[in-house]
Image (cartoon, rainbow, N blue to C red; front, side, top):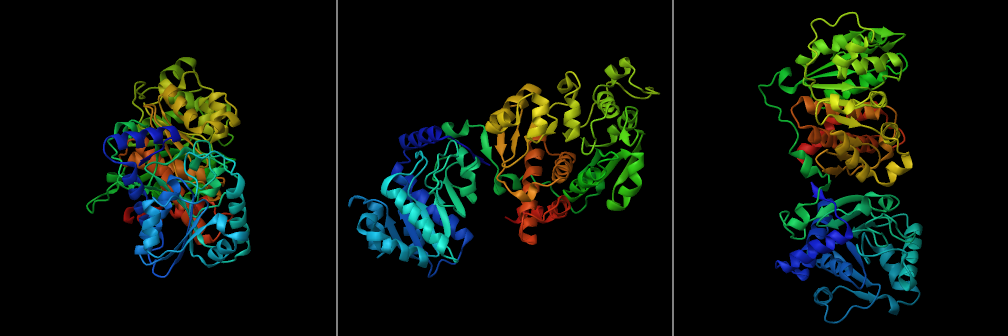
Length: 539
């Protein structure tokens, strides 16, 4: 995992590093070297590349010059275009001049003729004009340069790859505000930690893929170690993948019980079960109202089944007895996908999470004998309509096992909290953190850059913002995956992050295979979970 820090926090981190002996000059050298390495990871054969470094007058431009130095050493043909003159004492500029790299200063390039020639002939454009301290808008001659570059890029069918140094130039790295003239990057290599603006729209639209590069600041340095907001990375979550020993049996990987579905939303149960199985659970038991069980069996024949009492095709209160008897034999419980919001199902939820209170109220049960009212519930994931039903149960949060996992989208979060969707979306990280702490449970606030918040004050932002996931049923797949990782022994916070990461990556793989985000459906994402797990294990 990598930290997410504000601009002010980053300044304090760098200052502390400098005072401890890691000089600003050394950090710049490390930054440029790490950015070049990240570029070469994506495009390994640099021999003969045409590379243009678009460099500003400050530290971000200095980083770009160091990038140029290392790409030149890797065999690229590097040219530098300075938006403003840099001093002759600039060691990084002198070093790249000694490489024989052509240097052009904007004020000497009348009508941007050289700039046009560079853009149309370059394979890779490195944007290192403005860094994290910039506040839009872009003004003056620099604005004209960016407008010209965008114009030329728009005319060129074979436009170059664009790599942003730390952030796309013109972005407010705290808020995500961004200048209209900013360049849309294919890859942003941000330094030491991710910045909030990279994960907030509209700026996030300009970022491309995000890589966090090392600049030599130790993770143990208190100014960065004490920050609780993190950015999920492949390397960070890979260590959480459950082991798959060769002598395993189905019990090794846990049993998930999925209580889901209703006459109007039957498919949610099968999608959740598929998400759980594809994520590695050993046994998935699907508990559904009797009228829909028959036609779900062919959709997921690997599952076992609990047929539940119903009222007009929705789960009813007495179904809680069936589930309570099974709980000692499962390692994770998923509630909610496709429930609907009928009173009968609300009665079921009340009875399940608080059997003693429900019995005293006489909520439609025939028997209570044999049910231990102090029965300890297994780790729980609650999704979809289950979350809306919770909002109708007084003090629901105290009756769930500690650190249960709640997976609301913004609309469901609005029902649960009373906040408007606009308020939730304006402060996604803080909203998730505040309510996770208040409820005592893990909150997965879904959407572009999903936020997973722990009641202990930690939060992790996922790196996915793709329309491939904007489909009915994708949340059912996600909840099944999270429940699966719970059953396989992960702690709730880890299970939620890993499930979200695998789910998001599956969506990106699906969009790549289909050729468009428009045609991806929830079943595609479920089917590609094994591919995402396999790639994650190899990366």
